[in-house]
Length: 202
Image (cartoon, rainbow, N blue to C red; front, side):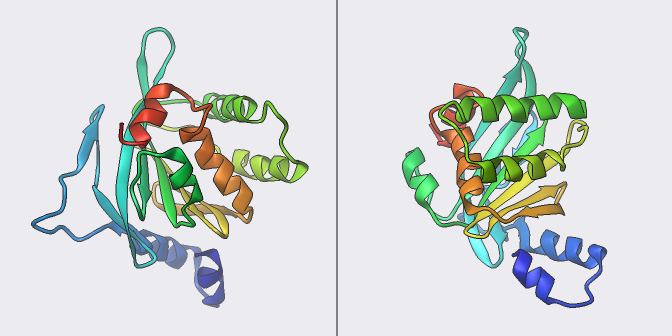
């Protein structure tokens, strides 16, 4: 996606944002399309269209915070071929779309702490120096969030396109990082089992 956008010389940032919004949009409704899924007050469509490809909602998962069980965010995963098997989803070439819909407000420091915690859990066996560069690029996109805000990660063989409320923020040209980012949600060390199980459609 980044290459196709960059190739269109003279596009303004506004035009790029419009192009992204068009490229990632709910698929047209049909009589047979499943109804949107709703979790913790967040409604997500059953299908979206990315670069002309129809992606299907694989599942949604809820992340709770503190011993009080505060609802933090709802994660949604869209793929070409839905599966309950993490290995199959990770092996899919993409595009895949991971969306984080915030239910509760959080400071920039709190969002960054969540990302650092996830990285520590999934880099216990060591991460490459290149992964550290990509992770720092991801941290540079972090901002304070309010209920209703959405961060999107478009995962492909080109890396990760980071979106905020549907607008492009940055492109991380690291396919391995795209794989690791999704593995951190549906692999052996997710933020919570409820997040992984939900994204796997269990």
